[in-house]
Image (cartoon, rainbow, N blue to C red; front, side):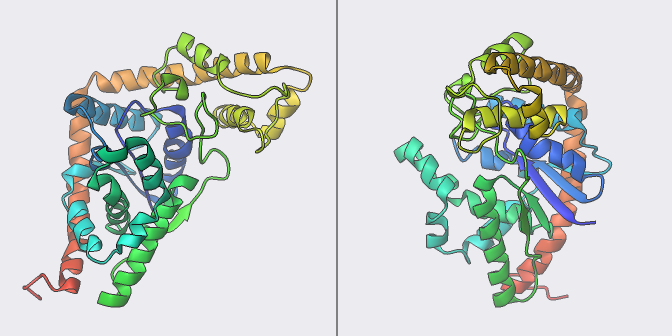
Length: 330
């Protein structure tokens, strides 16, 4: 069994891209691997958050994980901020990382263009905390989208450097990119990744959207003028919708193309909206049930966080000795 780590920011309502890119693969992964899945609330606050909304989003994310099939008996499910070893290791890694390594992070550059002078030091340092998240648990495999691959590569570099300078301490992780659906794009702009923090709700399809909202968003989703339903990387709009249809109906893109020979985008979008509604309604009912039992959600997170702290502390005891800050050498 391999140690696998997956996390999602509670910075807004989770969307279909989160499900396809992270949650569904995690559910599959827990069957044959040692999975750690957590709510990265400290990553979320690298951009401004309203405290009460953040609390709500943490609970909603947890309810969504459970509703989708994450089993706390099989998976270590916890809350990042409740495990202080994450930030402790991040500081130690900060002291080995180079400024140039962080300045090269393309995701930081992209977000800086949007946020300008309001960009925080936390956002700049985000990849170091992510590296700590990964290395703390001897993670072997990190499922990520293409946009996060660079961050895992930084974690690899930091692990190799630490092992070289202080002795073998960390497992060097490997990124794993899903062949289909690793990066679901925005419905209103298929050249950019779907984002729950997008300025327009037309960008994403929330896992909690009602049937009419689903229909409106899918019918207005950007495609092109060709009118032929096909997966073609040079046509990002229709390819994005075909990918979503493929994942939720468990059909190959080729099967979908065959089904819509001679049919237009209108028929395809109508069927996709119906398929999404059928898929999401039962999931929404489960999420609602979990949210009605908030105390149970908190109990599950607390139990997982306790286990995570115990595991993380064992690693940090080794790290402290390696760097020389632990005076007790027993």
